[in-house]
Image 1 (tube, one colour):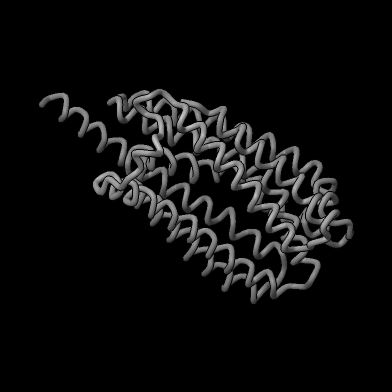
Image 2 (image 1 turned 60 degrees about the horizontal axis):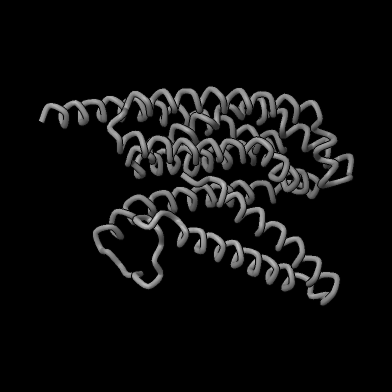
Length: 292
């Protein structure tokens, strides 16, 4: 129930990272290794703060360092939930590697444009991830309390709010696309290609909410394998196939960019179908437990 402490931890880590970057780069002139040390130090300090906060929670849930041990049944439950979620992140990374392979076959301006795009994209992507994390916790709490209806209402409202925010951010980003890309690259050719990329992907970025939020709601309700398989098939396999079909015949940034909204839509549709099927299954399970 404490969402403030993780924010403070990130804030502290960010400040320390910036400060350490300045020290290692300006004072010690340590280059790339200095940046790596700055990252390590900042993440360590943030992690220590989180551990300290965990020890200060209410006594029945506080982390007691003297009692640390391994509870095998709980460990198995954690792995059952965590491994598929980690595998999904790995699959998305693998998909991005395949996309980067095709991007690298284009000219240097296209490579630079996509490099800048992946930074500009964070304006839309990070709020969606935040909504997904919120609904995953919300769904887990309500399923644990046996309140399926509240979970469904929360998921629906979270999805609506996230889509509205994404739509507004997309419109603003497209309107000021040149200015956004100019932050990361001053070359007119690169900026023009970057604007082409967002003109293909950003109008459909709201679709990503269905993939992320419905998937996280499903995870919160106790199922992590189905979202992983949906991501594997659509984001990893189908996107890779599309890239190898479209890009060689028409080697430009639009051929790469168009694969993103297509696979978002496919994955989002699959996630929605499974979400409603899982919703019916949970209703039956809850009704059966009440009957018993």
